[in-house]
Length: 224
Image 1 (cartoon, rainbow, N blue to C red):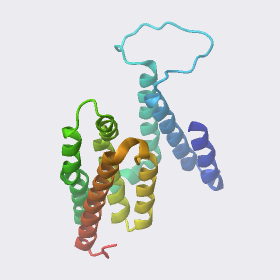
Image 2: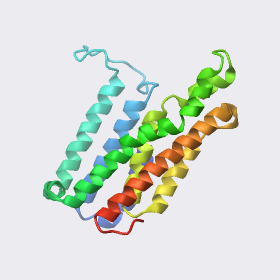
Image 3: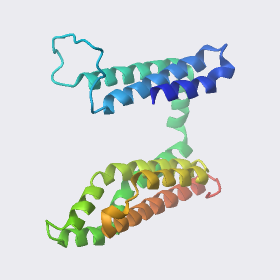
Image 4: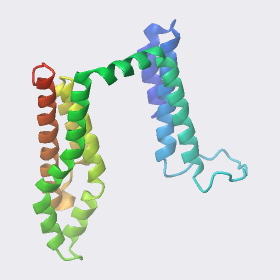
């Protein structure tokens, strides 16, 4: 992941090799990629062939997590350095912009209010699963699949709203396709997982689409 980020980023900023900011931005992205690797690497740090004992002064947090947090902080510092005054002026414009307030409000409603909508849409499936015996393999498979769906739903609605509000429905469809490929249930999960996935996804799409269309119409843009 880190090597791919560095290679693709280098190809992207290559035409601007004489400027400092593109390369600093690339460094920030590489640091961010490295922080993600360390934060979510469950296998720990790679071995270097030897070990060094360091006194533990910040609790029992794994070394990989500490390194990941440090890299993330470094990425944030470099990003702020690159953005500079533009970030400050953009933040000021967003704070006083009625259009930005409308879009952000609609986005928050779509992301968080879409959750209860998805819960309501999948309530019948969840009741059917809960009625199954504890030892039923179908129940175990369905519950295993439904675990963690809340966080994925939040991210899904956020991405879809952002793309739809930006007038990029093709990108929203791509995000939905990527979610289906990565998260979609297989035949091994059973019919309950498939119904849960389909109903929850449709509810998230409806929430994101409705709120993005309302936001765009409110600020004077076409609904799509």
